[in-house]
Image (cartoon, rainbow over all chains, first blue to last red; front, side, top):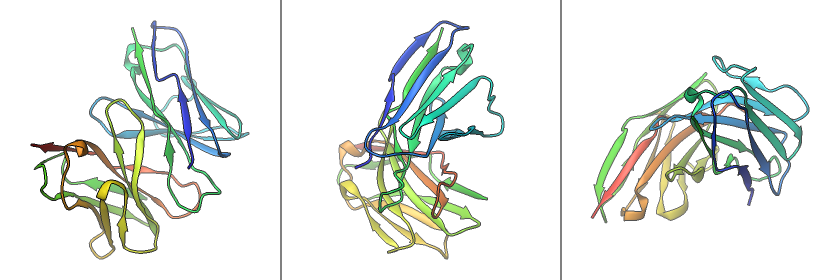
Length: 117
Length: 114
């Protein structure tokens, strides 16, 4: 079945630095990937939709200059948290859908726990 | 526009008893509906999906859900709870077809007690 690999699983960084999170579709090509953020004991909130070869579409309230998304290939999307601050500490999850799959369903990465100190 | 409401934030059941996690949706279009499970600090795993085929959908680990258009509901059930079912469950709605925006419910924490 479709597999999405997300790396790293955990990262701790200092305030003011940047962190890159990778999301890879391992056995399928994903023209569209999605990035979510989940605060403790809350649901997943869509941050942005990543489209291969074009600019990402950001949800209202998400700073595009802070959360840089690059979808340079059909199997890789990256989310860079720039100038991270403690309030950016969260669980980030990506997802993608295999367009060739016979069923509807979004495969999720295992998530990245970001802690900004 | 679409939305999904999970009516219970916490559900506690005894092991071996039935499970009912409630989900109501709102959609301007023909929806696709999913239930996902999330274990602590991990990604999400698809339990089951409804995509306009059979209204009673069977998923993994003995879970099933029934799509009721008249009630705009997609409740998740399991005849007999197991301790390993203790975790967070999310009801999800999206528009059928294509790469549509996915909307998550607020989640239901299921606790199975011995």
